[in-house]
Length: 444
Image (cartoon, rainbow, N blue to C red; front, side, top):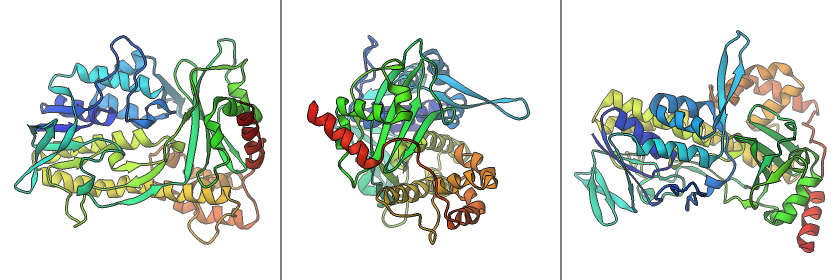
């Protein structure tokens, strides 16, 4: 087939490489011309999350090795660090990759440039062209590009085809964050980690995450409720530094003798939990011959680092369905929508429940023991009832959907009914941190 891909981020490029390696003729279009050839920083305008913290789960590497192996090799060459974890039977598995988003995208882009059958075109997609009630291609800067299949990988902010689709579920989640990149000093020992990918601190009214990247580079995030605006000053470097010093777990990473800052503080944009399938308001496919993949289908908050994992597993499923159905794009779209409903929507619903409940607890509410317990609270109860942890691994690794926790929800509910509550980590309360931030901003 002739395939037109809207968007040349990782989702669009891995899609393009997968189709091209199967012998299809692919053009991927994006407004961004790609990284500077001199190796200078890549602005990547219009992609808010590009410069922010990222975690790369095992699924990302799995899809690359299967569908774009040259991108996997390039990622390792540029410094991506596979996280190898031992299994009880003596084998090891790759649990993820430590990397910055820019390192990852440079690798994928370099592999895509060299992929036969894939053309990267810089331009603006004006819309999808239609003939006989189905997509026949795209219009790029006023010129038509014919295609048998159009793939919209334009991301969560893509608008060119938004009018064709139903509203879906979700929206802004009520949580925001700021982050800053650092590099561990050569003489510094590794600070404590919660797991192989990150360190997490839970406090009264806010949360802190540290995502470890390659070559000792890491990102520190302070996460807050959008309903409470007295931590807005964290976007100023002096306030972020003061807050980092006041939070013992974060100070262990960011103190001057441990790490150096690599840039300014980066305020994050609105965090979304949104799901939109392949259908329009009528319930039919939005447009036969047009399919959506990546963040345009499934967007979740970055706290669990699921974004690229969900995006690239969608790509793998789309490629599998085209292998199965060939040029029958109606069947491809129908099957992809059914798969999205079964495999992607549950992750968005999971995040919606967790994030709304987290924001309410930050506002002072107790745990709701009547409704469905959010997944993070089910997992937290394993500290009191270790049997709950038996199902934690498949959920945390995304080998099983959130419904796997249903089997232990009542055990977790019993823990909370006993009066037990998760303990916060040593550090300031929200109000105390707000005072630290206010003082730092006033003295700037």
